[in-house]
Image 1 (tube, rainbow, N blue to C red):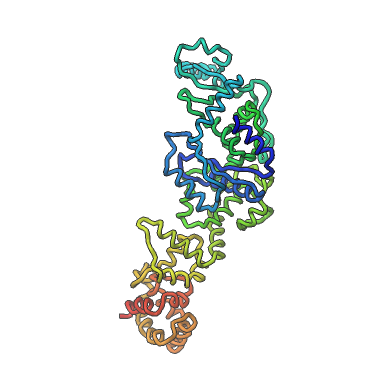
Image 2: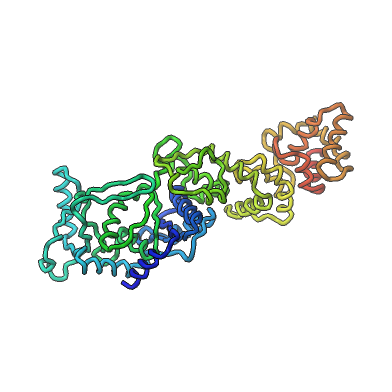
Length: 480
């Protein structure tokens, strides 16, 4: 009770919003959850409030340490830092039970001794009669002394039966629930463990949560949770329920639409800044602005601009946005991202200092062509690996006998020049003109021998980044 009074004073005195992201560790951090976390984080940062993280691990059978790690890693990768330590809901079971006992003592809850067989029979009868299947309140007004000695029981909320419960939602407007349609939900199971519905309300109150922003799939929960809040006489948080995210075809987002877990988008080569910008625009708008850097998002974000309609994934737009952020990201940062990407592979690829230096030197040209980190890494593979290239089909066509002869003829001119982009291009151009050739007739076999591909970032800058020794090793292999 002292905890409750302390938090009531704290919430009354605090002028700053307190928000939370409360994922269940029964799976990975998915796109919908990541957007929910982002919106809470943005609003907290916009208002100078607090953003808390709570792991709702009351489902002991389905919660796993791997899922907890995936959630924390996904949040960190997204750059969504939380204030203080994360809270684990299961560790607070004693506090949840304390509140249930307080409701019992106040007559706002009661013990229900109905057996599993009785409840099954009740539901079957309701089904046959075409009625809504819900608890019929059979122990609501019965004397507990009628139950057999030592009989197991659950604790149920004595819910309001008249009038309506109204969720004043900042996104969807007022949503009304007829109390006659809501049953007396279970607060404590027969083994004494708290249910999710009770735990959420107690944790939100104890953590001083002022705003609950979450997916619209929790809207029905809000109506039921308000009954607990009102029964305890606690302040009602501001609610905002976010419409769901649909696939490109308008259907509910599912695995068939592509990757769903945040880590999968990371592994496909999307940048954190891209994901923050893209998820922001899935259900929130600021005029016609599409590119909204995080600092700007924090300045602009509000609850009023959240849309009421379901958002729709557009992977082409995501790719284009990621290409934009790749182009404007500092070269050193992109190298660090590329290195981390390669180190996550199985088996991991570890770049030498020389390879990193080459990649950094070539990055201005490399990043102009890529829409994802994966594309960038694949396109730059010739820079961070050594040795003679294995030619792909297109490159092999460019390096026929005649092209190899042209390459051999150009090699002395290249060997004699300074090894920098402008000097290499000038030497290749002068050699081509002297032989009555176009620059491309010399450049194409050069590119194929150096990269193993028919296309690459700007050729002569790439040669400079590779360095004299490595470039000549590759070129000589196709002139012998």
